[in-house]
Picture 1 (spheres, rainbow, N blue to C red):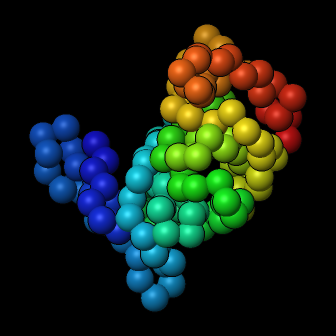
Picture 2 (cartoon, rainbow, N blue to C red; picture 1 turned 60 degrees about the vertical axis):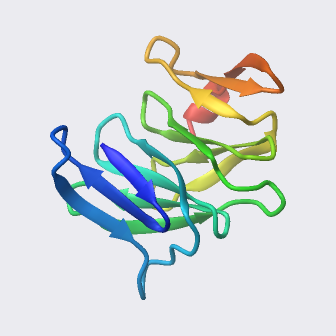
Length: 151
């Protein structure tokens, strides 16, 4: 269970016992507040949306160590919605101002592979591994991202 409070992400067990406390520091540039969290389906990484930046931080769940800060495009707003593709190769980000980003997360440093409009609340499902459902402008959209999964 993940719980964001200000610039700290608390990791808790099912019984609400603390496991880890992820926050910024001298070598971890978390500047704002936690606005979203998503865990990879294999459980090895967690992604945290940071209002200050805006950016997304990547943490290793085996050691609870910070791995990377992914800068988001300017003018798009904070990444309030995060979802990881079922195959764990793409991270989808929907922003507060309707931007949509897809990042390749199969490498150590995530890379932006799509940047455009039509972002919002996101959902993925294992039966549709090459799609993401986006709630944008009061409509559900099924976005095909299969062309990105080979990246």
